[in-house]
Length: 201
Ligand code: ATP
Ligand code: MG
Image 1 (cartoon, protein in one colour):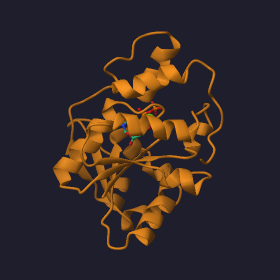
Image 2 (cartoon, protein in one colour; image 1 turned 90 degrees about the vertical axis):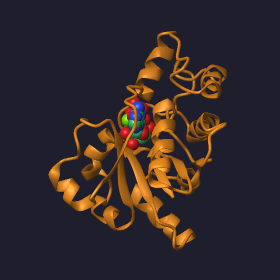
Image 3 (cartoon, rainbow, N blue to C red; image 1 turned 180 degrees about the horizontal axis):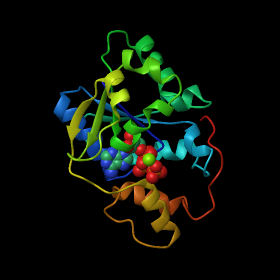
Image 4 (cartoon, protein in one colour; image 1 turned 135 degrees about the vertical axis):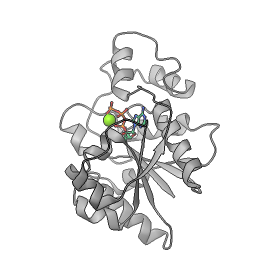
């Protein structure tokens, strides 16, 4: 089972392709897009859309896909979100499952800032998705994690780009699945109305 953790504010094609290609390349049964309840590294810096809405957007983003699922595990747990807790919870609930944490090269480079990161290599295989040539995580981290790598077509799409375009009144067509775009419009996201600190469902 693969876990692609994120804020997904909003989810976009980069997330879907990363999850799908990792699942394919590694022969995983499924990849779960794990919606962070309180992504502390981000909530310190900007308002984050309520977790329930981000979960709904991820469900929309995965419509019509195979072997990909939205997970509300971190939202149900509530509180500040740490991957170490999530991995331990899954191993408790589903003994025997082999876990793969899928992450972009940017996230991999920042792994040493994660809560109790030293415990992570024993809990899962860490899989970096990226284009060949994108900087690998630094040597010290590489020794600790023995990363697997999956190449995906480079997609320079980020949630930040999408939020900025919505705020500027520009099109986000094609950057995210249509079901996500329509939810962004319906809920008036990224225009200042819905920003607050995330809470549990
Ligand atoms: P933000 O711009 O708000 O930081 P983001 O697009 O980076 O959003 P996150 O929810 O922060 O999205 O990312 C979740 C995970 O998906 C991270 O591991 C990140 O590296 C990865 N990811 C995000 N965008 C891409 C992409 N275009 N290609 C590959 N991986 C991606
Ligand atoms: Mg990011």
